[in-house]
Image 1 (tube, one colour):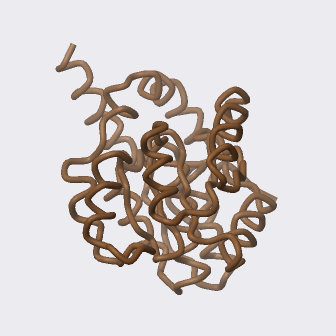
Image 2 (cartoon, rainbow, N blue to C red):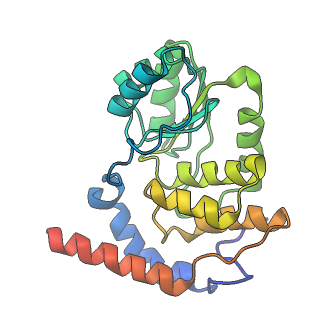
Amino acid sequence: MTTSCVSHGGYSPMAPRCFGFVASLLVSSSLFLGQLPANANSEKLSTPLPTTNTSATAQVLTQVVPNFGVVTPFLLRGAQPSRQGFEALKAAGVKTVINLRDGKKDISNEKELVESMGMKSVSIPLSVFKSVKDEDIEKFLKIVNDPKNGPIYMHCRQGQDRCGTMVAIYRLTQQNWGATQAYDEMLKYGFHPFFIGLTNSMYRVASNMGRPETPPSANEIYTDLKSRLKQAIGTI
């Protein structure tokens, strides 16, 4: 069973209501969900790509796939690719594309395109405003742990929030990372802390594995939210 708040520390049960309205305003602004972190791609290619010409492939993918990163040689991550991006991923050896977006048109259009290129398309629709369901986590882990599916490319819209959360869950369950370490990586790729349902999902997994850690406090999230809102107003 999932919840929208964590009970063991940090969040109040009222937190989603406190942040929801302002967060929804920020979601609609391309200033936040359309802007990638500075040097988002250049710092994340320490893991070899699944091709023979690693350097050339990394350079191409970094140029055509926004917020691109390598989790393992088997699992790549990033934002929504263009047709050119999908072609580059196919050329890099990607066999499966996991789409975390929840728009029906986005899902159907991508499925048609990806399958026409000879790759497998998997949809795991997630919302930035809700916790990740246990069945979606199980589906995700089953796919990424099946060698026949890899290499895999996983994305949401910007490769920041839903994608960041699922990568963090992978780090926790498959690589024995701690929740704080995984959350720090989420932030590095541009995760927005006011999506507390997603944050809660990752910390819930850690707690269920017997490795509970304290999530960001409401004050920390509120401070981040004010900073982003101030930045948005300042650019109008």
